[in-house]
Every structure is written in C-alpha cells, then in structure tokens.
Image 1 (cartoon, helix red, strand yellow):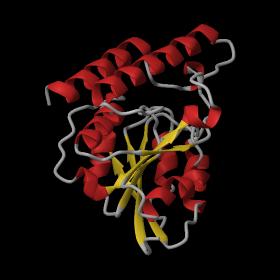
Image 2 (tube, helix red, strand yellow; image 1 turned 45 degrees about the vertical axis):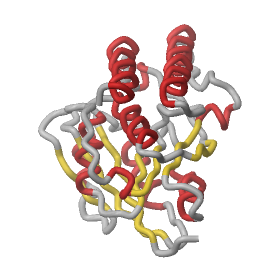
Image 3 (spheres, helix red, strand yellow; image 1 turned 60 degrees about the horizontal axis):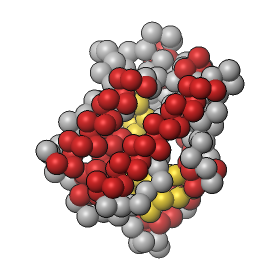
Length: 244
C-alpha cells in the first residue's frame, strides 16, 4: 500500500445552488488513511446564487477556488482544474450529488495498492444493468439516454479494443503523471471520453469499481443535452481514435 499520497479532487460547478453546499460539506468530511486532499473548485459564473455559496468555502484549509468569467463547459473547467492540481492522484467529482463522495476510498484502493494507475467508477456494475437512469415522469427520455450510453460504450470498446462498462462515468481517478504532457481539446461532456481515449491509447488499462448512482433529470438541473452532447461524444470517440 502506497503511503502519504495527496489527492486532488476537481469539482466543476455551474448553477448547482440546490446541491453545492451539501456536496462540499460531504467532500470535506471524507477522511482516507494516509491520504491528504486538496479540493479544487472551478466556478463558472453561475446565475442561481451558486457563486455566493462557493465563496463561503474559500478560506477552508483544503479548498482552492478558481472563478471563470462565464460558463465555457464542463470540459473546459476540468482542464483548468488539471492545470492547478498538485496531488499525486486526481479525482473528478460533479457537484450534483449523483455520485457519493463517501466512496472515494473504494475508488482509490486499486491505485494505492499498486494494482493500476487508472480507475473508473462503474454505474452499470453496481446496478447489474445498463439502465442506470430512471426519471419520474421522463421514462422515454431516460430510456433514450440509456440506449445512447450503451451504444457509445460498445462503439468505444470496439474501436479501442477494451471491454469497459462505463467510460462515460464522472468518477475518473488516475495518477497525475498519467496525463503529463497531454493536451486536451474538448470543452464539454466529450472531455469524459477524450480523457479515457487518450489514457487507453497511452497504455493505461482502467480498473472499474462499482459505484452508487442517483440519476437526476433535466427538470432537476441535469445539463447534458442528448443531441448536442451525443454528437460531440460520437466525434470524440472517432476523432481521438484515428485523427488526434
């Protein structure tokens, strides 16, 4: 077991006033033996009072906050977070409480034990089903997203010669050295796929760990858009396999 590691938790935040305080309190409360942490918040000029809530955490010992002048996309915020991360290990955390910070220790175990340098938190593995999204009153939209996720996962696996259940997961954990020298091009949700594509092509085989997932609908603030982001994801899967 590797000792005395530093974990950089990168949290992109935009219009999450309903969740952000609870999320940050839970992340701050996480304690992992022999692991210190820094929490890097990228706030993208929210319009719902989120920025004012984030400012209350600026002086917390483990917290670093960076403010963007406008929302450039989740991927863009993550790239800024990568630039400021100083930890041995990087973990990506969304601000909407679909994923549980209390599961960090399980996600880190394969890296700290030396089994791998790259971990994905898999939602289908935990649910034993590809139908990970269920929205009250939005049955067909949830099914559309589930089918889209299944299609893109199978496309990714076939093009990159891997067998992953959830390359789109938000919970991506990896040693900072894995992305040394990498230049990321995506600015939206397609960065999730670009990151996995480039790490796989660099020779890092991810270990998947089952994680809990509470799906959130568009009515509850979910920001992914099926047509726009679906098109960008398809381009990313193909582009970063053959053209980049």
